[in-house]
Length: 172
Image (cartoon, rainbow, N blue to C red; front, side, top):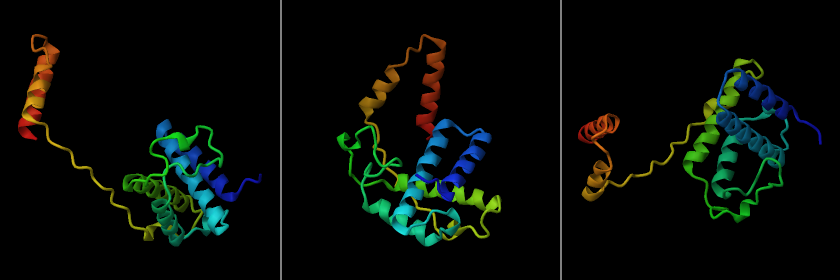
């Protein structure tokens, strides 16, 4: 298998991110997002160079993410952890996840632009996706009383936490 120019650029970007001291979780997220995007572009548009990517490719990728389900594709092509056994296999990908993918791809292209690997950042034209916010249900009175009774106020640290929780509930 031949390494593409896109994969080399991703490797350079990941080295730069590592040098900046980003967390392992962030690095994994960036790499997974970019490798999935690169695989999509190679399969659908026969693009193997990140310099040829335009805003229309990212829009097509977003549309594809919205249409396909969770875990139906992997970077390696043959996942080893049997995603089809998951309960959420094939379900819709959340807007928050798609927004994170778009943010990661935009960060990559900002890096490419700053390093002068590309003349124009194609992702400037793509608007950020606004994630859906989940409405939190309010606690009932008995649940609040149960929460505050859980503190042992005879101990200083728990009394302090009880006071802090009271302030938070009163103010906010």
